[in-house]
Length: 220
Image 1 (tube, helix red, strand yellow):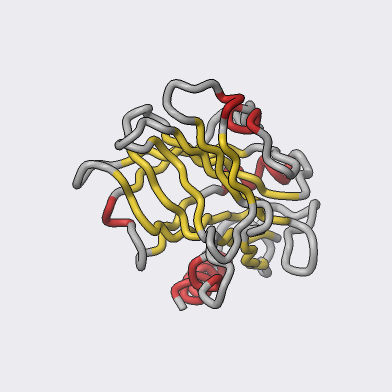
Image 2 (image 1 turned 90 degrees about the vertical axis):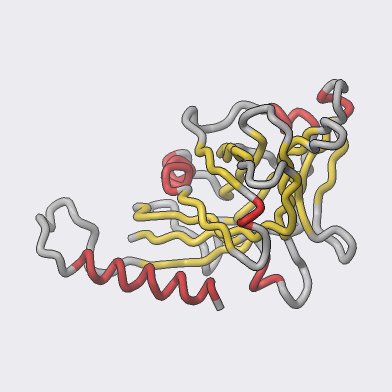
């Protein structure tokens, strides 16, 4: 329900901007399109590197199942193990984004199932635009991002389900279009090295529409 509300708000904002009377030579056309793309649960996953171990010994979890319904990002305060999450949003198909589209905005909508951190503390989560042709491999844990200025957001215990976390990823989506990427693929990791771990919902069952990672893109 919240996701439908967000889409309605985006439409109203677009209409308001259209009627503001600015110089139309630089403004987007009167009609923009808003699309919502769920992540591909078969490709989503995470990589766990145990504390003190080389990346090559990383443990890969890929593909959501009836028993695996989430991905992890951050550093486990109890063990020092580090997780990096990977989400894949296909840009092709009927609800995708055409390669010749101009991006107005892009928002990542995720639901946090749990946070492991000191009460009141924030976990800085970095979001990289990456490319990880399936299946995931341990080298993806530390591969170079496709955009040199990744986005960083803060997650706290206040963000835990049922709240939705909305993150502006417009710059990453613009770069994905510039590089004509067939999929919007991101990696989420702890940006500080200070312990703190988040669990991102990636439901595959009846609650998927309400809880699974979602990319909303406005374009023309």
